[in-house]
Image (cartoon, rainbow, N blue to C red; front, side):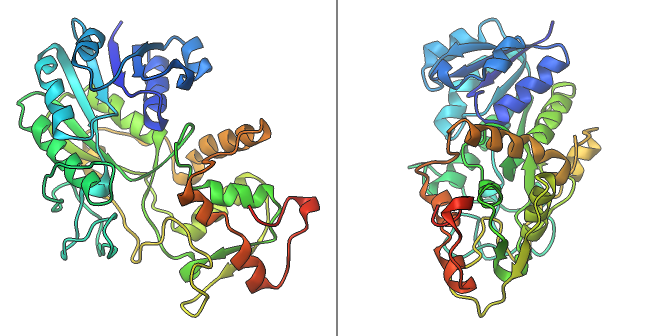
Length: 349
């Protein structure tokens, strides 16, 4: 039986990858800080959880042990993280580092976390310029992408078969920041309208975790040193995203497609890049990768998980200011001239 090790495996991408590999007959070991985050159904399916701190050298060595057919690092953020892996890569047949499209810069040097939004007029290919490698706080708008580039370089320069995978706006079961909750919550609250800034034409390429999992399985069968984008085969804009979710939940609402004269903040959503930011996935397709499905075909994994969690009393993304901003109904109520009735779950979120 082939063995896979997924470092930081209890997140949205790690879970999807584990399910994909288990379904294909792999033995899967997943690491994390606490077993509390290990999905019970995944453990029941045969995945083994190993409590280990990613940056603990002894723990890392113990997890990798005599080696693995596939090593997936979902918690590699800095050059130091990458360098910790280097002594172990000779015992790994194929390795994958999960990076991010946040590393890309446009012609003016702007990236998705910069003050000025980037502008990409064509699908972004893997050879597109990136941020300069850097150190410092990786958990910051300027440091995240720079640290990822430094980590990528350390692994790609190692001479080992490491594939760097760059996903975009990830969606799936277990997402730490489920952006689509802004639409799911409105539907559960029976909001009669959905407001979309810039007519909902903005887009930021979505990435189903299950599609990334399919790509990782492809890479496992074709070890090599390379960079691959990971994104859905379509690139829906915000209006299409809202529509796909509403359709899945059997909900109908009025679309309020706003123009530039709308009040500031009204209709905000997390995908508002104009022109839409799209990743080219041709290199992945050339490798033999086959997507699991389009956005509309794969978003039910996340939507159903969100609905089930909310029904159980768990509020997705609770205390996350990022999501709270998109769930503030005050502007909508003022603009539309109505106050949703608490009897149907409306009002302030």
